[in-house]
Length: 84
Image (tube, rainbow, N blue to C red; front, side, top):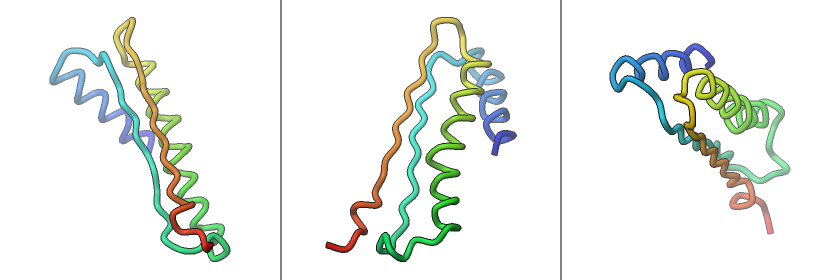
């Protein structure tokens, strides 16, 4: 995962010269009722929604030009699949 983030920013800098803005939008949908979510389901969701977002922002901070900005958008669609 982290290697992909490093490669993303390396390739962007090679192509455009610098990074001014990074928009980080993540979200994993677990399409099952909450009571049926397993630990593995949770780990997959957490990995994308937290870990991936953190390491993208970390790499952006190391690569980005002074004065650059990051935006992180995290979506949780778990409620859409919760039994009433």
